[in-house]
Each structure stands twice: as C-alpha cells, then as structure tokens.
Length: 166
Length: 454
Image 1 (cartoon, one colour):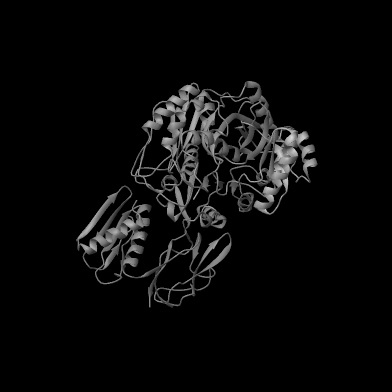
Image 2 (cartoon, chains in turn red, green):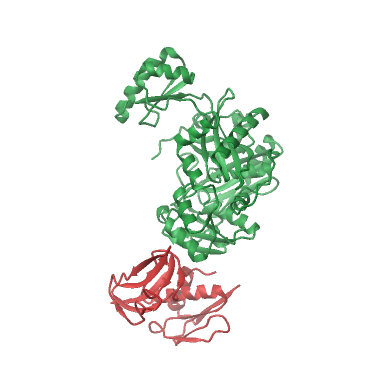
C-alpha cells in the first residue's frame, strides 16, 4: 500500500524532474503517473468504463491506478495529492461518521461542484451515533469536488471537499 | 462468536488482541490517531479507522469517535485492552446502549472495584483480609494510640491531605506514638494546610502478589495462579514473574481462594486481577482489584498454557469457562518490560528505531508492536516490548532472560535493556528474596541515586 504522503512525493518527483512517467506495481494494484500534460483518464479495476476528468491546472502529472480495493484507496489519495499540489484547499473531516451531501434524503445537496462558498457555510453532514453534525467550510472559495460519495463512512482527517480558495 | 471486534487501544496490546481474534477467525477493526497511522496494529487489522489527532484525549480516550468507528465498520464487540478506557464504566455503558458487546466485566463491577474505599469494604465483607487502618482522621494522640492498638504495630501515620512522604511517620511501638503523632500532624499542617492524620498497619517488606481470575456468565470463577510484581519503580512495574518464588502451596490456596471469593461476591465476569500485599511474616492483605487484562498477562499464559485474551473474547461471547478449579501451573516465567527510556534517568526516549532484532529460541516470547524504522511517537507510553522468558524453573528462566536480553537489538533509542541485565545479575534478585523495596535499594547501592523527575 502506498500512503498519501508517498503518492504526493511521487507526483512532485515526476513534475520536478519532468519525467515522462512513473509506474508502480504492487500486489493488489498498479499506479501510473503520466508526466505528459494531457486530459487525465481515470480507470478503476479492469471492467469500469474510463471517466474523463479535466486536469486541475496546466500540465500536472496524470495519475491512474488499476486493481482492486487497494487501487481505490490509492486513487483517492492520488486525487487529494493532486489537489493539494495544485494549491487547492482540502477540507478534512474533524470527526468519524457517515458522510451525507444533503440535510435529508429528499433534500437538495448543500453544495455542488462550481458553487461559491463562504467560511462557516455548511457543506455537508457527518453523522455519528444518530447525531447529524454539520460540517462548515473553513475557506471562502469555489467547490471543486467532493471526495466521498453520499453515505460513505469517513474517518478523522478524511478529505471531504476540494475548495479553490479566493 | 463475534463477527467483528473493534480494538479500542494501540501498541502491543492492540496487536495482541488482533492475534487472538485472528486465531478465533473474528474480523478486526483497529482505531488509531494520526500519529499511529504507520502502526503495526493498523497494518494487521482487517480494517482501520483514524479517530483523531495525536493527543490521547482526542483519540484513544475519545468515546464518541470510537463508538462512531464501531458504527461505520459494523463491529459487534469492543475490546478495550489496558489503560485508556479499559476501566471506564461509562464507556462500557455507552457501548451497551449502542448494542456493542463489551469484552470485559460489567460496568457495575468496574465501578465498584474502581472505588478503592468500596472495593476494600467489599473485600472485608467477603472475609478477605484487608490492611488494617483507621481510615478516619484521628482526633489526637490518645485516639491514635487506641487505633494503633487495634491495628497492631508497626504502624504508619499518614497525612489525610498528603503524599510525597511528608506527614508520614513509621512507629514501631506505643511509647513513641504520641510524639510521632504530633510531629506528623505539624508537618502535614505546614505542607498541606491540613494536619489531619490517619494510620495503617505498616508492612515491613511487602511483596506485590496478584491473582489472575476468569469468570463466565454462569457464575463460575477460576483463578490461574499468581504473579509476583515486586520489582517496581515509583509504582511502575518493571519485572513480573509467575509463580512467586516465595508462596507456599498453603498460602497459594488461601490467597487464590480469597481472590475467587471476592470475584464471586461481586458477580465478576471475564478477566480480572486481585492484588495483594504479602508481609514478611506470611500475612496477606487485599489492596485492589483490576477489572481488565493486565500488561503482564503473558507470564500467566506461559506457565498455564492458557490464552487469556482468547478467553476474554470467548467469555464475552457467552462461552462457558471450561477450566478446572485448580489450573495446573508448570515451570517459571519472567517478563521484563522493555521501555524506550534513558536507563539511568528513566526519562522517555522517543524517536526512530534504526534497527530492531528480537531474540528467539527456546522459551522466549516477545510481545511488541515496534519494528526497524518505526518512529516511536512522543504522545503515549514508552513500552517498546515485553520480553518473556520461560524455563522449567526460576533459574532456567533467569538464564534464558539473560541470553535473550543480550541478543535483543534495539538501536536508535535508549532502552531499559541494560537495567534489566543488571537486575538479572543481582544476587538478591536471583535469590528470590525480593520485595517492593527492591528497586529503591538496587538503584541506591549501584550508585544510581533515584533522580528527581524534571
């Protein structure tokens, strides 16, 4: 398993040394960091259709991973690493619980990608022990993406949102 | 049997519990602070949840975080290890409310034994000898004399408000008592603003002897023999052994029966330890009961062949205690607590372990969570490894321990290995003629005066 820190270091390495790329294979997953600026393609586990994902800023290394559940964790860590390296602020969960995008199952989500938010604005709920904890933004800026899916369990420090600060 | 156990702890005990769960084919969830993300217990658990920043109060003592972690992972039981929340009755109750099984005794037992005064009273009511004492402050020298006559000499006068040796006087006979009482009272008044004094029987060379008990849901209680933990520095155990080199079969039966009786009276379930002080004249007195698995449980495991942590899990899952009333004890086991600390000043020595090679071979067991390259965080205790040596008798256990200590490589941090080596070579230790005053004397005589803590 690669840690978040290690992935971040690898991406920085690719960028600084202007490498064509780095490929790492471990039991359970394969990680590829492509140094050539391009649209990034993300693939998770052989069968899933590739999703197009726009690059965060010009020419960052593109990260792909293939494999099983380890691959998913690595991919998430890679996404966060890319965000932080591009100067995007990552809001992390202050508590353990279940992530919800909206105040109740039928309601509209608190925020969507592209929304402008202010410091103190509620972005999501993390629920634990039947208590709905409102998680507030700690930055003024624009929501770039949410990392967890709705109803996904999150731990302390887990990345919740990428926010492009004003 | 449980499907999934969450271990609400860290370090070597978390790993220990994971091992027991693995053998029982129970899935495991590790919880950890951000400082412990690279910990072995996190690596080996089936799932891991980060529950907070480094500080214990925000992580390993954070009840809501741990309960939330149990919720999101679908755990059905929680093992609290030792320390942290292991004897927190409120935590056990919260878990019960959330339909999580607590691997330990009932919250009621935890509370009762956690109140030292109530525990003492419960023991006395159960016919277990307790250290005689006045408990209430003494009005004057005359009241003191009366109390001392009841309690029996020698007695120790102690300040109700105090500690640190001030306001304490040892009195060996009635002639000195009134004078000593007045002096002690004045000293206490000056030091703590309260001159109240009480008294207790003074034990000349007490030995710390504790009995391991197990109890099931059906009221069956069994003891698995004793451990001697007299080698302590400032009430921190350094070396433990099983059996005690000094207990006669008669004394073992009496103390064991007392431990079982106390556990029965309380309706105790799961693992627990009843602690006694044994005086030089063979009289024993109840001190306290610990309602959790203890650090030194391996020595009992080595001499009985029983896996105490697996028993805890099995008993919590409702299994019957299928052990005989008299569990056979064979051979002798000694445990040295290897701490990451300066061997002379006893100050913690956190940092990166550059290289680590643990000893093996016949009769050696090492319980540890560290490895070469591991960074010992500064936020938690300094226990690095528990080194246990087993032999056919105490002499062989000591010889094996000496060999194992020599072959134990820990580089990059200071450890207490050199201290343990010196103790193993000590004639008094080797003779088995030890007491809780051993370390004090040992450090003085070897020229290492105990230093005042910074």
